[in-house]
Image 1 (cartoon, rainbow, N blue to C red):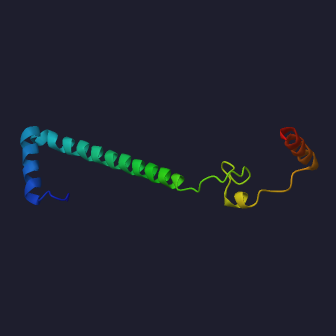
Image 2: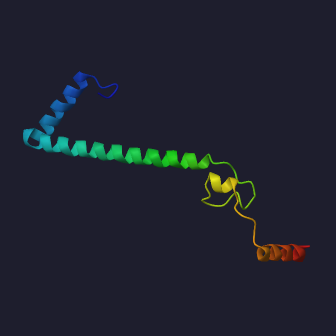
Image 3: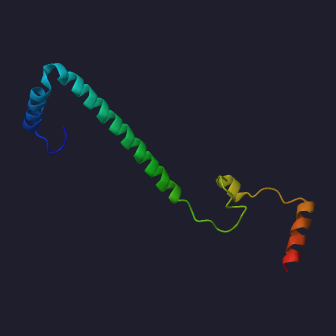
Length: 102
């Protein structure tokens, strides 16, 4: 039972609903209300999971500026192990770019 809603209050609400809707429409109205509350709970759970996921993503460590370790989608093993050394051709291209900048 919801907090702050005593059994007497529930009885009054049910009696008013019975008078307003009548005995023929009351069961359908109760079903519709139940479906609406179930949908609201689903939306609430989905929203909560989205917010929790966003907060968990926001808790990731800040980038260090190291391209090899800050790769998008890299898992922890990939971040700690950048892989094999570049090929001699890639090293030559890197040296050439460094010389051009200097």
